[in-house]
Image (tube, one colour):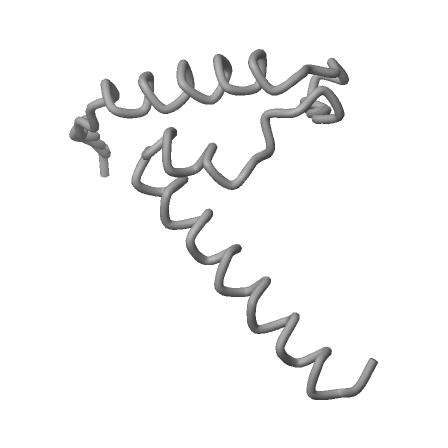
Length: 84
């Protein structure tokens, strides 16, 4: 493999990785999941050590992104009183 071929591969992978990150940040689960192959050979290992097929992975991602869309941020003022 030439250095030009290596550079092209790296460039293509960075572009795909960037798209996946954007879809993940925007909680666009359908677009995010389009990068994964729905095949019998698909395996996903979760942080909890469980192994899942594509459909289970799709369900987990959909639930996760749905929960992100429902989250709301609120600030809680913190008041400190000091006695001199």
